[in-house]
Length: 131
Image 1 (cartoon, rainbow, N blue to C red):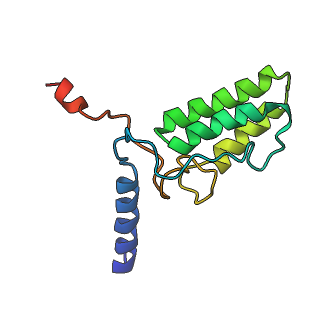
Image 2: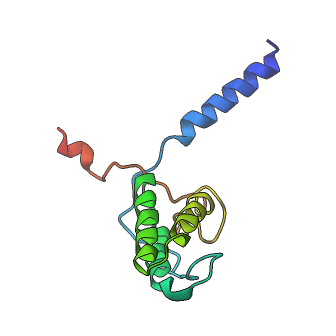
């Protein structure tokens, strides 16, 4: 194997290892003020408040699990408005288009500087609790 291929392999593995570690979730709100565009890239219709609440959680950011929970709450809220198929399309849209590593204004953790948004499950001071 050529040395260049080793370099690319080592660089790729290093990137994957370092990208898997997330900082501890902050307890302070984001510096950017909260804004909502309603249902991003989607009509607002009678479920605007569902999207507004979803935007609040996305603005703050958090763990990957919290993002999934927020997305599930969104489709449950839209389904409660008696929409049957639309919630599934919305879920697919937010799972793909709302990823925190995308530099979009509606990404996970959009209240924080990009690419922040995803955080670990560790709580501040959790290490002391285990001792």
